[in-house]
Length: 109
Figure 1 (cartoon, rainbow, N blue to C red):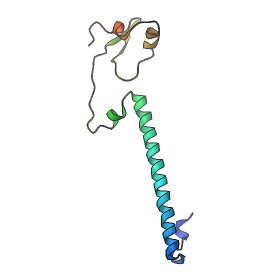
Figure 2 (figure 1 turned 180 degrees about the horizontal axis):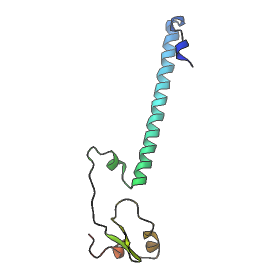
Figure 3 (figure 1 turned 135 degrees about the vertical axis):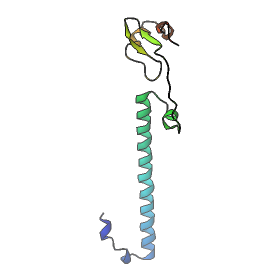
C-alpha cells in the first residue's frame, strides 16, 4: 500500500476509526514479530557462547577468568577452562568413562 496515495479526507469518522484500529493491530503484530525474532537471536547467541541469557543481558558484564583446568592427556596443548561449551576432545574421554575430575590439570583450580 502506498501511504502517499491514501486520501484521509475521503474517509468518514467511522472509516478513520476503523483504519486506525487496523493500523494499531498491524503495529502490535509487527512489534510481536520483532520481539520474537529478538528472543530467538538472543537465545542463539547465548547458546553459541555458552552463556546464560541472564549473563548475556546483565547490565554489568562480569569477566570470568579461570586457569585452564582441564587438559587433554593425549595433547597437553589442548586445555579447557571449564567455561562455555566443552571442546571436542573432551567427549571421547567422557564417553569412555573418564570423569572431568580425572582430566583436571595438576596445577589447575
